[in-house]
Length: 114
Image 1 (tube, rainbow, N blue to C red):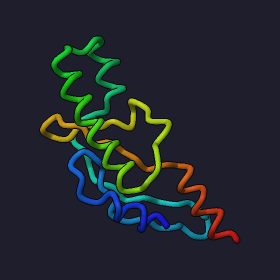
Image 2: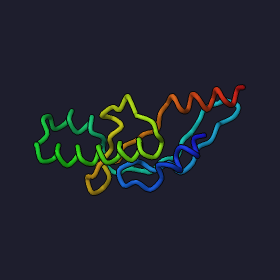
Image 3: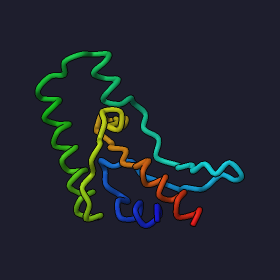
C-alpha cells in the first residue's frame, strides 16, 4: 500500500522522496527510508529567525501550493494536518514537503494484523 502511494508521488521536486519501507520484526515497527534534506524545517526557521520576509513567504507559498496540488492530483485525496515541521528545506533552500502520514503507517500495521 505504501509503495503504491509513494510511486504516485515519485519525482516531484517539492515532495520528499520515499525510497523504501519495511516492517521490523519482532517489534512490529514500520521504518521508512526517505530522502535526506540538508537544511532544517520551517518550524525551526521561524523559531530561530522570527518573522520571515514577504518575498520568501511568497516563494515558499507557491512551492507548497505546487506540492499539495501534485499530491491531490495524483492521489485523489486532500491532505490535512500539514505542520511546519513537515516543510523541510533542501540545499538550495527550496521546500521539500514530507507527506509521510503516520495514519498510513498505522493502516499498514492494521492490514498486516488482519
